[in-house]
Picture 1 (spheres, one colour):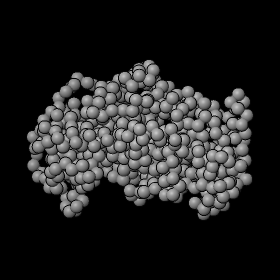
Picture 2 (cartoon, helix red, strand yellow):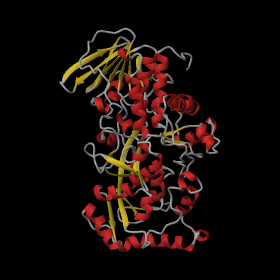
Picture 3 (cartoon, one colour):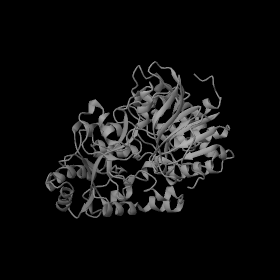
Picture 4 (cartoon, one colour):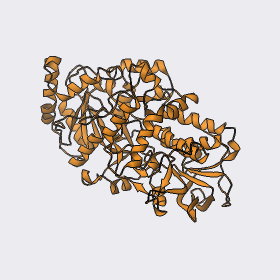
Length: 551
């Protein structure tokens, strides 16, 4: 996307009515559009190249948790802010000190329709009609209703539309875009934040920029794996030596440090949204890049020695955080999923725009055909290009290839059979005699049409007509920071005494999606992109003098 002109040098003279936005991801772009709408001058800074503006939003799948939408009602779902808040609080486990995170949660469930759903539709951005049901809760309450809305065109289409809107904006002349600019410090004059400084990474020359206010929209910390380990939840034990990076590599927390240096409050950095089913990306964009798979529900999930995880088996779609926590507490360097080709083509998926081409490119007939016949292209790509996915004609060959990935002999064919055969035997007895929690959860999920079409009813793994057998080595993969810079409902950064810092705002992931941790310990999933939009709107409203009475 070409958005001329980009400037590589800027005067440090103070500019009346000007705002600095640091970070051109979804939150930064949304805030910039809101400011331009009201005639403000905006300096938009980003570390990436011009064609990479949009950040992680260019690569995300594009699911949003939205409450009481027309699409929910179309699907016969009767949702409300009260139901959604109860679900949210069941996962969040807020502490008594979490006043602002809780208030942001309340704001989200009450305002996500006008400020996210309707705002996007006004820009010609739509959602797939079928609402999905994720994070239903494992041992605690999660989403008691389907509310996961998928963007038609994925998040990439949304970002492209917003970038085009920016390019054609009537106030475009008031916008200066600075790419390849790394901000490492904020500047203050008296009690007011007045600008920022850093390095032009093309010329290595320092720069300083002054304005009336600064919005931090730089994402979280999960792109820096060392920082992830430093903030690893203490209850989970030692941080993993090996982690895959599913975040943006510039999400390194540098501006969190700058805010903290000036007295701003940064909280809950140990609250992260990571994934249990990461594999090495078939076509990595940077070192350590991982791909998050959406695991097959009919696959068996095994520990590093090939033993089935239990007593409660892993089944995706219920509680991602608890799956990650259990793997971390057990100190497992990896886990395995065992399945066959037929299950994989029906159920296996990958997160992100890159591996959901038919949704990304908005091709409904191709998507329908794929749903009917299975995603053979994804399975073929993983088998040929991902070193963590292998197949075998029988258990002996599968075990041999699994061991080859790690260079050891931990997996025995006999162990695999001991884990798989009892599960297959239950399937053979028929649903009346099923006594396996995974089969019960599959049956429950298949009652919802959005899951039924993507989930095998009951399928034996060792079925000789459904082969070859497949194994996927899964590692923990970073994704989102759920803690961050603490903010009020105007997205103003708060200091250690809880007072707003004049001229300083934080939005999106940098702010923990509001309040320094609006999700609490767990997310209902889909609260991140929409949280970026909500927090950005709040900052833009306050800076443009709208809704000043909001506490």
